[in-house]
Length: 236
Image (cartoon, rainbow, N blue to C red; front, side):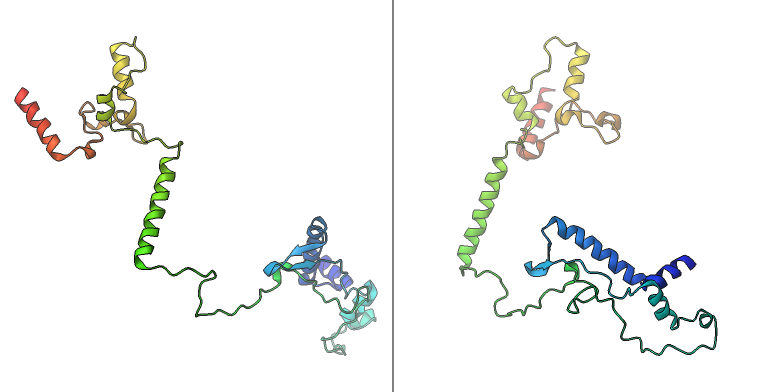
């Protein structure tokens, strides 16, 4: 704490002002890469120029200003007079032009321009007025375009239901020279028939008969399911 206070007193720099100096140094590094300019709000370009801290007027002068006296013994005198200055004006070193203010401009701190909102025209772009029928047709047209894009996506191929694949003969074994155990395992480990939970459990582990073809039957009409059930009962 003593070292920090002594350094601040000798440089006439407070903690906040040291942050401002570090921020200005960072802005200079950024501006050097972009040709001396940085982007501000609303598309404006802000020129970043090097500025020196204006209130560093020398080590001894800074100490005298901070302690209100050059007399070292007066610094420890509890009944010393109060500072004669009002605290609103400070001596500067004159390194920069008086037109330059401190802290230097920061593009990230520049406020945006206040823009008045025209309530009669809330939309930015003028839209062509459409009737209710035309709006419905335009909405359906967008739906059709979305559907075409989804169908045309070659990265997504929807697999047919199992009973359609089995009827068309597209359900093929992986190998023609498999044993009975391998054949059964290959059929039950693929597609819907090989469903496993995140823990690796199978349907048969829960007592479900995996040989029953109930997969993908949401697309089969109820009348067809009843007909198959009656034929199965009559054959038995």
